[in-house]
Amino acid sequence: LNTENEASVTIAIRMNALSIMVSELRNATSSMTSVPKPLKFLRPHFSKIREYQVSITDTDTETLGLRARLADVLAVLAMTMGKAEDRDSLKFKLSAMEDYKVLLSRGETIEKDNLGS
Image (cartoon, one colour):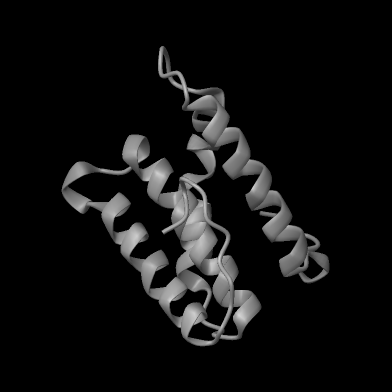
């Protein structure tokens, strides 16, 4: 997270960064012979990303899409970084599904991929 220039980071920039992360995760996890590099890289940032996703409270369409997409990525990351007893992966996936349902009820189209709900 860019704490120094937080105000200058738009949702469009964040969505673009998430799309790149999704692409890297998808490509890295196609062959699971070892821990994929994107997972190793994101491990130290997992708690910050989780805190940011939970802190998003705006319900405008663009922000809701960001929160849902973040939850999708966090669900994948939580499989290797979360505590099993916390069931973070399931919690994030359910959170994303709820946000996607709201977006669909507003007539929004949702990008479908293997990380999408």
